[in-house]
Amino acid sequence: MKIFIILFTMFLIAIFFFKDKRRDGHTHGDKTYRHHHRIGHKHGEGFSIDFYAYNSKIRYWNPTFKVSLAVLTLILCIVLDNPYVSTVVIIAMAYLTIVKGELPIGEYLPILAVQISFILIGTFTIGIDFSKQSMGQYNLYLGFCYVFTSQAKLKEVIFLILKVFAAISALQMMILSTPSSEIIYVLRKAHVPKLIVELMNIIYRYIFILIDVYTKMKNSAESRQGYCDFKTSCYTFGSITSNMLVISLKKANSYYDAMEARCYDGDLVFLEEDRKVEAIQIVSATIFIIFLIILRSFTR
Image 1 (cartoon, helix red, strand yellow):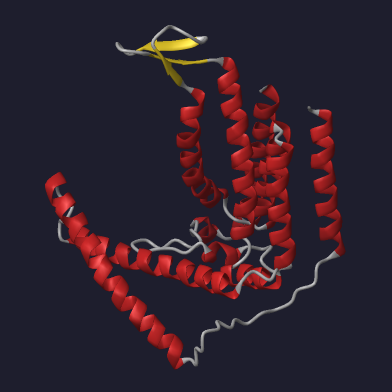
Image 2 (image 1 turned 30 degrees about the vertical axis):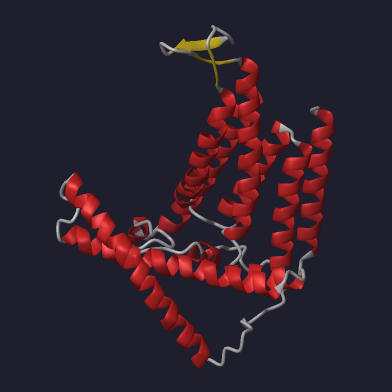
């Protein structure tokens, strides 16, 4: 496990050093730049993950290349099933997102924190077990049974967390650097059924519309002391939830009317732009994939 700690420590030091250098370069002679603007977040309003994608410096890379790299990396994380491979993937995807894409690390970590919480909850049940007798290297008596675990189980959980986290990091790199419309474009080129692609796009867009509506309703309730105590908070939450159903139906009708007013005939059409893949990108991706396979063979 020491290798994981060393790799993560070196990576975080490099990231912070890089960011400090960039900040020093920008703040030289301009003290007003010290104000840090949070991309894609507005106080009191909802946010869309597309804000990060549109502001990414690697947004103009070929979308097919980015989606293919992310999916292939995800598959390798699952197939190779190696903690060293997972660690390298996590570092590489973070490097692409933070350093190459210039996404602030303060924005990247909170996004991953949501996924990490689900991973920990999902893997917690794998690391522990219950028994009526004292078992395992570590156990705790609860009065009616023992909760126990062992170093082998803990090792299995850590490796599983690394593998899942690496797969999620690959997808996060794709999402945080590729707008949803370009991902839809890649899916169409892959001959995914049109109905599935259009449903994905409409549902994705509609989620953020409802989040924005909910945020505004919550802010309005807070300004009227709607969360002053637990009883009032429960009542306010129930009222907002019931209103969301009515508002969602109204929004659905309004947006469908807007689509028909723009000549919607059952086929969503987007502006699609072809971007060339640079040779250095293909070479780098190939070397990265080969390195993961070689690393797996040397660390069995």
